[in-house]
Amino acid sequence: MSVLTIDAGTTGVTALIVSENGEVAARGYQEFAQHYPRTGWVEHVPEEIWQATLAACQSALDATDDAPTCIGITNQRETAVLWNRRRASSPRRAIVWQDRRTADICQELRDAGHEDRVTDITGLRLDPYFTATKLTWIQRNDQRAWSGVESGDVALGTVDSYIIARLTGGTRHITDASNASRTLLFDLRAGTWSDEMCELFGVPISALPEVVPSYGVVAESEPDDFLGLKLPIAGIAGDQQAAMFGQNCYTPGSSKCTYGTGSFILVNTGTEPVPPRQGLLSTVLWQHPDGRLDYALEGSIFVTGAAVQWLRDGLGFIDSAAQSEALAASVEDSGGVVFVPALTGLGAPDWDPYARGAIFGITRGTGRAHLARATLDAIAFEVRDVVEAMARASGTELPELRVDGGASANDLLCHIQADQLGVSVARPQIQETTALGAAFLAGLGTGVWDSTDDLAHTWKLDRRFEPRDRDDAAYRRWRVAVERSKGWAGLE
Image (cartoon, rainbow, N blue to C red):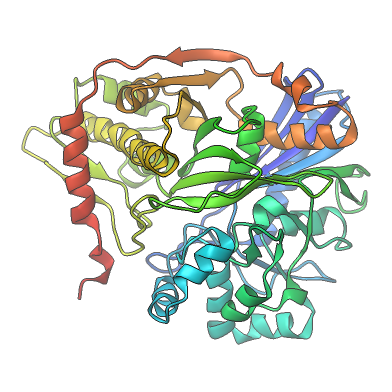
């Protein structure tokens, strides 16, 4: 038995065929376009996400004779998608989680005194990162698209809901609790959509998807719409929650960091949501078929891997992201250069949508290698900021940090990270743990695996990085630089 998993990320879709021993039998990948119509705006064309999904899945299926028995789905979270329920066409581009256009709406709600109540109900904070303010913006600025929402013809959701609608020929409009908890519209303790939050943000509950468990059969693909396949859809989770499942972080206190476009550090807090403090978020990890919810504290960093992509695509310093390691390793340190990659504002623990990227300490002797090294340092410093905030919020230190995602293949980054945290960094053999977690959820929901105990045996260590000397002076310079980057977009 095997599982087809769809990982609809921020820049492309990965499809894996995962065997019952937890190994990847085949994979496919297809990028899709990023659209930047204005400074701070980031958009995706939903149809391009769907076509990338079809292409990635077909590539994976063509690469193996192992026929999947079910489907798992994981996705970029918080992105707001609208689509016609009958035709599946979208009346406008999706507004991506990185998009900053709703900063003024957030400030308006904050000035009106709503933030404490929002945080109390949702575990989140007022920030453009989350879905609800994007929907408020569409309501105010795109009446043509919103009129379909009001008439009931157009559905609202996140990327998982959109893909499931396409997989099922429009017959199912669903999401799981992990994705719902990232919208600012979900009552974290009740486990349902919040009437109060929907009214605050002007979002009709009737347009939102049904919230279903994160594993167990919830729908079935339609062969005419999905590559001739009629398969149960049995696992759904936001990408960071799926990565926790793929990293076997099933018990309270276990933690992971995914280095993707951004970096996201989560620690399992068990069956009770922990009040968010120190710039952290409280979020649903997953919902069990019996309705039980598990929770996490999360620190969301918006730009880490995207900073390396900027070195490649924006500056032309490198031809591939992998080259950043060799270039950065060619110098002993950054030569005093500090890079704050606030290219789409700052997330945890600072939360400033008006911050912008900044480079400090440039001299006549500064070269490409110094900036590459400063970029890797910045990623490690950002993660240290969050891990230390978690320690202050919980009163406990993390025993180790499990890492995954594309940049976790960078040995130099993992060494710097272990040094900055003062704890070991453990990298698994399979670093695509986001897609792997969705496969595990789907397989658990269909009997491919009987329990999380079975899944725990699939995790295999690739390498452990132990801490060495820590450069606290460089970290202190980093914190000064972060403060100087704040509020830049708000300057008149």
